[in-house]
Image 1 (cartoon, helix red, strand yellow):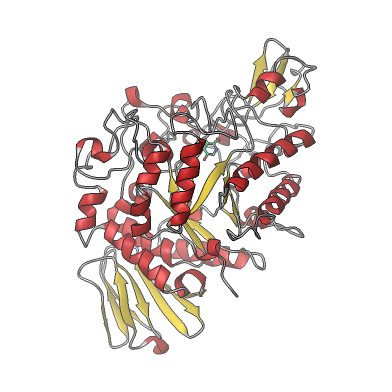
Image 2 (cartoon, helix red, strand yellow; image 1 turned 90 degrees about the horizontal axis):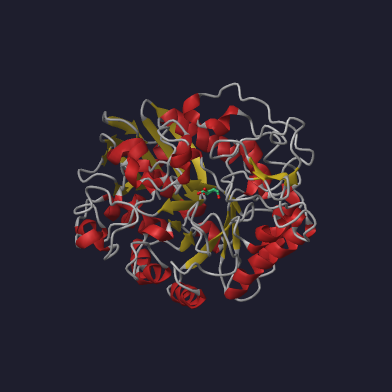
Length: 533
Ligand code: NOJ
């Protein structure tokens, strides 16, 4: 097999508001990303995915798009974008944009027209329904951010559907004109040279045609957030979404021969593994990479992790390429979930599993979730259902670059506060420290680049015992062993006969494991990578 770039690459997610400000408004911008490209190259990643940068009212911080084919002035303009793309490509970095097809902003001209009258040509570009007999919403569907997913429109006397905020009306993807317009949006950016898209909430795009009520969720608890009161049986994951996904893939594949290599599509899909697998496609290919978020939610013990990995590997369809994610702009950070010591073990896991890993900015520094005072809350998710720890501001705080004012992120007041330990937990300081988690990430990324076995080799589970998880990665004649200690106690792990004489390539701790007499002495919270042959 000849591996394609998106199979061997490591993707780095940039939340653009928080990466680097250059125009002094306390919000990151495109020139800021361009300024930091050399850091990303030195870190050793291959591709960046930038969360939305399109003109937006910022009600959901860019996921409410008011113009799909332009750049929000806070981030720069199309010239800045072209420049960033050119500079990234010059350094061998791929650039992926965030495509938000399920909904637009209510200020998008399409929706402005759609809500203008029932007879407007764009009325059916969005999802309008009459009130129920009692005047209430057409059905019981709940917004992912809590509350009814239907908004009454006084002027035209109907409800419109919004899976997220009322300022984010859902587009009607059953309408051919919507499909055509949105496919043109993809072409607009692909023609400019982007290397692909992360597609927002792909599994939401089509809803059951007759809008039946969703059934109650028997495992609902208040802390889960109101959206979980119902199972999203009819409002998501409808069979018709697969034709759309296949059409998007066909568009992306149409750009394969233009000298820039293949373009990649990554679907944001939160579904159980058996449902997720359908998004690789059936007769027609769909997503190259349907995001696999299981490492975020799984219990952090050796047995659970082994089960997740082996079940996922087993469920992949023929030719389906695996991928792994430890964190993103919507979920608690890995350091907050697992603590600093296990964040290092998690880094080894992420970067030694078969398939394409996605890293969330700042995780390479061990950034944790930042406590946000109620007066500083910006995220609508938190504002709508406060106190349930569903808010996402804590994971979107500015990237700390150095120990100068505002951590080198901005010379103004940052839009969200910095984490408290930024004077020491920052790129400049941690670059000097060979034992920092940043140094570990650099070593891991360099190792992964040097040993294709780590990205494309077969995965073989070797041993799960107590707190330890041991697996092999094998490619041609090369055999590597990864051993993780998920706990505090030391373990002596006997290596299989073929692995006697293995060399230690990397450890997460300074006082690295001993490899002797065909055994590894694995310290507390230690993870190692060994090379057998
Ligand atoms: C998923 C995005 O990741 C999230 O940040 C956003 O709020 C919703 N989609 C709505 O667009």
